[in-house]
Length: 342
Image (cartoon, rainbow, N blue to C red; front, side, top):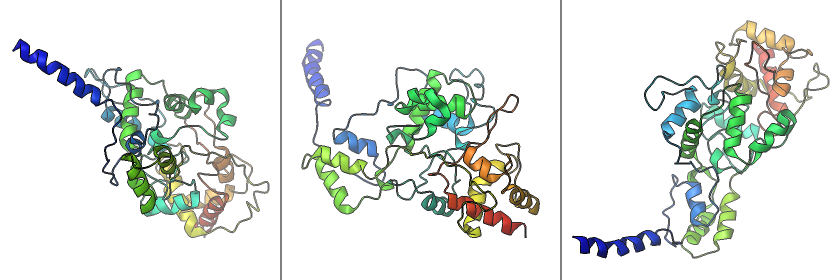
């Protein structure tokens, strides 16, 4: 028996070593194939936010519960964690599904039509779906809001999650096992090849390169060109003349989509807000009345500046950037509430 073990061990070692050598094996790419898996096969550098399996007691299910519910049972079974935030969960501001029809563009007009068709909220935060496939976070003008806090978050997904947990959600810091569990969950909602608008010719080129029959670097660049590796953020301000507005004529039918997929997501029955909205004449009248005012009740004001947390009232409203709600959509919303009160 001893001699058999001695004989097999070198063979096993050779087999294991072979598994770490570059392999030009074809990948059967389907719509469910992970984009990251294909990029790995093309020699792309692995993401630094791969799950740290050295941290114990982690699971994707724990991460899913933290994202959607804000707390989980302790791994040892001794009760539940404190809520990560008393005010929000991640899905208050972020979807966890694809929300853009073409992942190459951050187009709020196309997104609104897509989310309305698929009954998805129209939210101020970029979806967490595919967040592990991005390279930078809190992009663009977010440095104006968070200052130096953005620096450890800009190029580090763990840092971005930590900033979101403590500043955006106004909650507690995450334990290591919670952070790694959230990452484990986010890797289950990474981009899939079927999410991309890949023409057949491009897909064939990528598949060939994974088999060593093409330029892998060029194929990786081609694949990366079909989705954004960051979420742009441009801050806008309310119109100078709030009576005249932004100058565009509003479409009340489009405004109804904004109201239903955005406003009611947080304000219906005070889901995430102290301020209640519904489809009553009272709600429409209140919004219409305050639209042209220079007050915290003006939709121009809160959509472009948000509201700030304050002592005793840490819940607040985040603002919408240009990429998350256009000026035209704000005017569409105004046209809808004006029509709704009549």
